[in-house]
Image 1 (cartoon, rainbow, N blue to C red):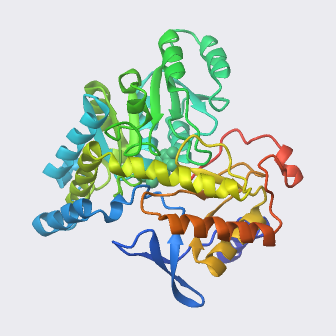
Image 2 (cartoon, rainbow, N blue to C red):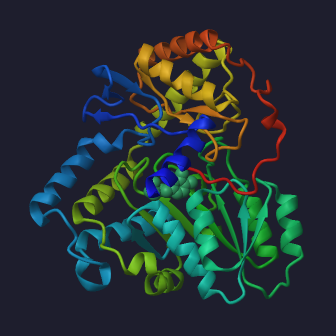
Image 3 (tube, rainbow, N blue to C red):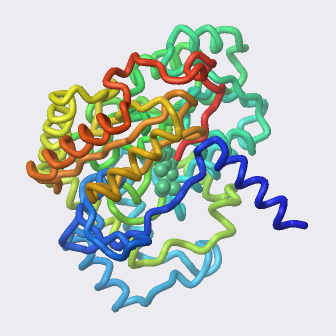
Length: 421
Ligand SMILES: *Cc1c(COP(=O)(O)O)cnc(C)c1O
């Protein structure tokens, strides 16, 4: 009886062409972006073009050596929650490093970026009496979930729309606590929030600002402090959230803010208190990665160069690269089954791995391939990518123009809140 319910839940997804299959990959340190793909026809080399290990730091010797040394010195697990027996010297050091990275008084580390958003936003809502959240409509699932769990009133403002945000702020009493929750780099479109304008509005209407810099830390700013560092705005944003799992190549999430704010979260957030701390080896590896990227600009420069070269190679072949201001290059498809088919053909026929991005990660009718070049992709690999995609686009008669609309669904309104990831 139960299995038939589960089967029905799956067949609905299959029917819509958005059932997800995972690629079984073995990443090999020293060979990234190459990996071994174990598919139905056996094992073969593929080139990864959709990794969030944006700078290849997961295999950087500085990072892996720090991790190995700490495992040897301290063992594998943390040994407990932070309150009971899991606060280790490496995690204390890591938090110092993170507070310094963003120029904040304090930082708090969580087991993932998802947990840091969920735990912090839900706790903020409980700490601030009568709080109202103003949430960008493109916010990540972890922020949506945290705000939902706070039990507070939520208003969704149109994506990066300052007039809409101001209208909503102005309609609220000045003495009601308000939290504006938004991202710096939006992960599926690669656009950037107008952070300075949001801070201006927050000041005028006395709101607390919460920014997710997950897709920017390590990659932007002269020390890798994200877009807020690049634009000199870190001290104007009240709380900066980030991950250790993307550009820093490890695992874990964090928030940085004033000492009072961090102490309140530390003392009240269930998702922090009741779970085992990150292992010391991961903390040390993350610290090594952050420190390295604070002083080395080479990876950031090469990253931007590879992104520019990849964008140029795709546009030269009239492929529909969507507008993006960052390292994220979305390639428009506009239909879920074709999107999956294109990804399948790239993997099977060309040894190129790009995961299709379908609803609910992006609105229906905007299905896409999300390409993330890294500093480790070569000119030859870029050319191979563009040639392979061109071939697949021709074979499937896919749109060459982002404006070309696919099915009727394109005209449907964007859902109030998508769930990313
Ligand atoms: C990936 C992601 C997260 C979650 O970070 P993890 O460390 O992977 O849990 C949070 N916010 C955004 C915008 C993300 O894309």
